[in-house]
Image 1 (cartoon, rainbow, N blue to C red):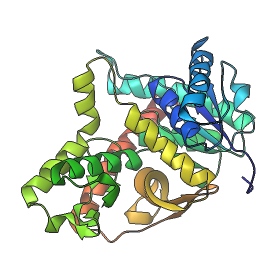
Image 2 (image 1 turned 90 degrees about the vertical axis):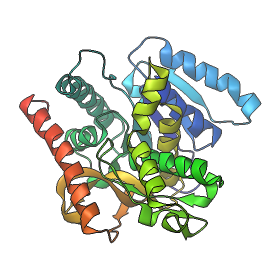
Image 3 (image 1 turned 45 degrees about the horizontal axis):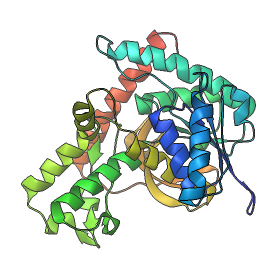
Length: 316
């Protein structure tokens, strides 16, 4: 990703999340975007729609769509949103197996056509799928990262803003752990214009915000009834793309491969990373309490259970 070149971003999966990633990347003019999906006509149609929005929104990014995985060739970043949502009657194991098969196929194509890319996984269950992708791609771990903490931290920021009436631009948060009910929001690293949230809100309000953050995705599913969140997940993935292609080295919470950090090994978990050219530059060890460490390790148990289930299913 040399300076001055025009970047190429591929979105594998042209559903609501993938199309939102494409839209945000185009509007931020991070590079040219290609949408790839197995559903005939869908990526082409959404790409054409986004192209027609360009003159109004003021972006010149070229957006294309294809049903052929060869279209990802030469991509600097590949965002993977392909996968099935959990449907009524479908067990967690069923979802793991189905999405595990999809991720396996997608990774074979990415490795063939875009072997130098940085890959961002959005497919759920996110941390487990990111681990699977790392193993199937054969890429260095720093070039395979999951979108989790960026979304969870954004939700945390939004809820703090709603509670305090402060512009969310002035709020910083940090969320560790798996992307699910066992995530670990860290109030002690949450500030409003530099002021710790613990100095601004009573403990019971902070705990309510933390709990709402943990259930953030479920709250939207219960409201929509026939779908799940896509604007905020799409924006979170695009934020990661921005940090990579512009080599910003932003400190962002992402699902990264751990090799002893936080006492965890051979697992993908949400942790603070410096994200820039080439992917994860460094995993940052934050001082956290024994209580938060225990919660983080409990969060890891859920991810390990998913990894073991993939092995039982012969997907991994």
